[in-house]
Image (tube, rainbow, N blue to C red; front, side, top):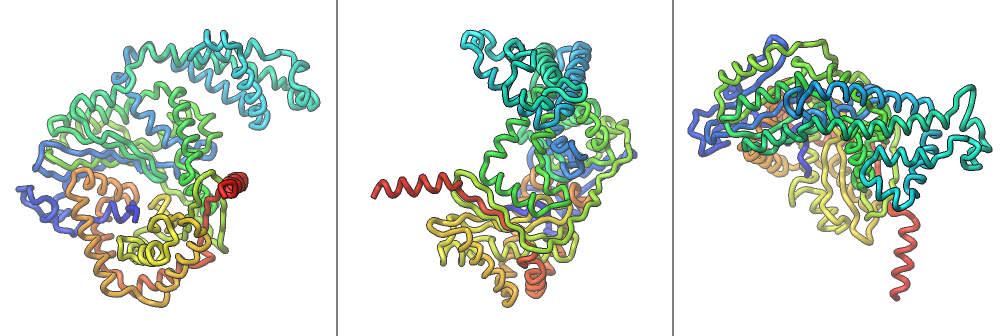
Length: 579
């Protein structure tokens, strides 16, 4: 079973720390006894667990903001911002910040004008014009393309030289619809040519700006000092930044991170936007990712969980640095942040450093709550995605999240279904019936702060179909409704869960991550202890009750990945040709 973010990553508490590290000679107690914490006057939360078995520490900084907090027409900002916070500050990543300022101002002016024109053109007209210009660019003479090379600015100027200025010289199917080119005093073709001039100027400024940038300096500094697992991640509900370092680099980490979140410089914004757009294209071309997004889009009609974290391509294309600065200023504030540190550190020294580097960070009013509630689903929803890949199936049911009382028996139910070789779906669907190419997995997604989905992920094994797999899965669900889970099954799940958490919490990384994840979703790392106790109290009757309540046809969304008809026909013809 894929790890469930709220529980599998999260629940530790009340498991005595005694077993966590046999080599640790420190006096060990429960998690509550080991955690030391402070909240600064500006609202910044800091949690520390001292573990002196090795001279290293792991730090995680979490902001309670993700894609579900984004405004209309601004999707993808949280993920984009995660990228930009590796670009440095006024002192990190710059060869002279004073030289960058006028270039970035000019960049923003060009980008703003491009955005303004593109909106005025309307998406359909802009796309037609841009497709035409891109075709002209691809048909430039070989010697011209060779002279241009990788110079994007020169490329667009060459296109402008080839594009007609007079609308009468444009394609005939355009001139037959004159309102497409000119209407009510608007010369749309002239506007598009102006857009291309600004696009060329933007590309030129990007190259000029690089003269004053030390690229990837944040990563270089950390790697030079022995950094490990330097990374960041954006969810629907949070964004986190992490790294592991030698213990003697604690103050270096404090100073760099404080500078990143208080004095960031969003340099290389427009070149990074191209990187994000390419990432989006790759995600859209991934069959599993495409199917999953189709599922959540169909399941969530109102709640922002139905919008991809990376954002819509149309929004990404129009995002400006000013948009990002507004998003950053709204949510990246100390009273929306937690620092978690686990390792060979002294908590009192940590708190002193935090006050030194973060104490002057100004708190602001911040509202992270998403008040949209997904309406109750009133019938099964089905969506089919065509992709040239083997068939796949995802079945999703709307379910609540912790601390809703039903979330805990649902977690145990998922483990009964898919945890290990003795789980029900493994034994029945995968082994005995041989319907799938892999054991079905069960997980909650797409995030965990608000009501989400309990989803079953699987793929049929040829010659079986997704429909056959569906029926077999539903049959196992019906058994759960009429036959209580056995005490033996429940005890196995409990024991596996305890051991899993003990193993996970033996690392600085997992403990720091766990406390951060609990803060991100519930606002307090102490939810760990609450959730573990509640899980251990789940009974077979609780599991049976939630199976009846949530595993219904009315409450489910089904997404299937199928091959295009042309591909299927070609495969059939190929097989017949071999006979």
